[in-house]
Image 1: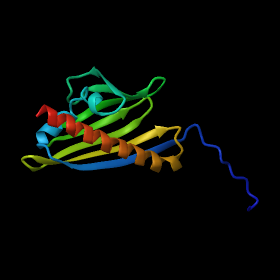
Image 2: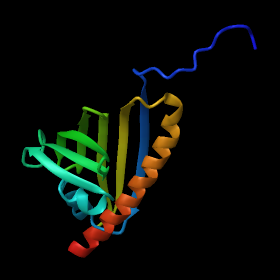
Image 3: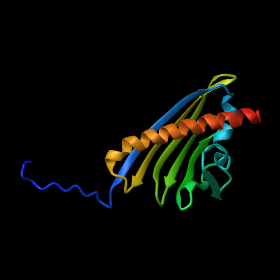
Image 4: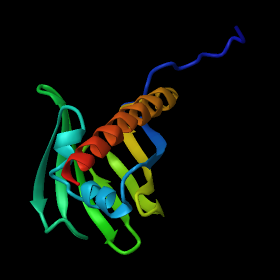
Length: 161
């Protein structure tokens, strides 16, 4: 030891930044995938253990909703607001507005062919009380969870086509 005192406590003000990106090519038309992505209530059908409640809005910019994931009492309410939704460009910017998670989500769908598209889902989230050293494994787990969710979303979209 170097003789100095090292404080190993985690600050109650700790807030880790969790960032991840999921990119997938799907054998579905871009418009079908985009429409499924912006059906906020529909997320409950393909995001495991999730319920969605629309607080206000028509689904477009300004809409606020809460996606609650988990089983009570161990559930996490994720309150969000749609900041922008461009139907032509097939892009969405969502803000996570707390009280627990804050940050940004960017969704984009790009046609590759008439029947294939690329989807990109980027999350940059601040998580209170999470020590920074845990951000990488949490991001890894979140990315894997969203990969599974996107696969389930594609399956649901195929059934609706």
